Image (cartoon, rainbow over all chains, first blue to last red):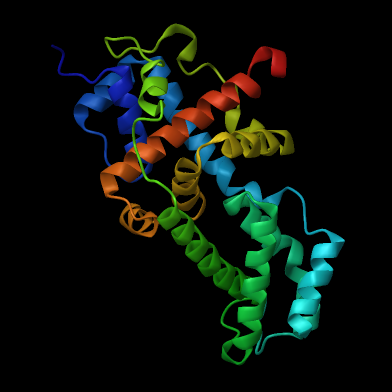
Length: 75
Length: 196
């Protein structure tokens, strides 16, 4: 049995890495060997960056909702 | 840097000045328009009561977002308490198993595909944001809540687990599922050649 993680194990480790866990040397060796795992790591990073930008776009409040809010603040 | 404000402005102007930004902030985390509106209202009413304590050490918008953020956390905690926190038995494990061969290697078309030269640049577009919103909506609520707290709010892993009322190991599984499903959803719906 290989001492290196497989792609499935790597996917879990790469997710944990996003949450602050350091990769061990086996994972680094696997990343070096596996283009697809490097791609998965980059895609997790894109997701994190993109999701943090979501509030910068999208719909605003409807006029009716704004009116409700103004009334709530008045009342 | 803008000069610090000394006191909160007239609340009558808050909805016009900050309403849209507060709503987008809440909606991006809650993904339910009505609930997001209610949270903005709760935050503004709470701010009205706390106006005298605003010391102008941050901008008024930052202060209001801080209050809204607390309301969102309360909402997520409540939702997490009311939901069933199960990690298996609902086809979740089977779905994950389908992405990999028995030997742990990616199964053909489920392997992460090439997202093109500059995925970070493409990810800044409004189209990508719309696709990501759709993919977030497709996540199960527990998985979406975990991802929102961790990646959008940047809440530390232990605090995130505490807020959601799950053990840290359980949270890691939820986050893994969120990332894998979002990655796959975007790949099939946004980065696929026929979708471009």
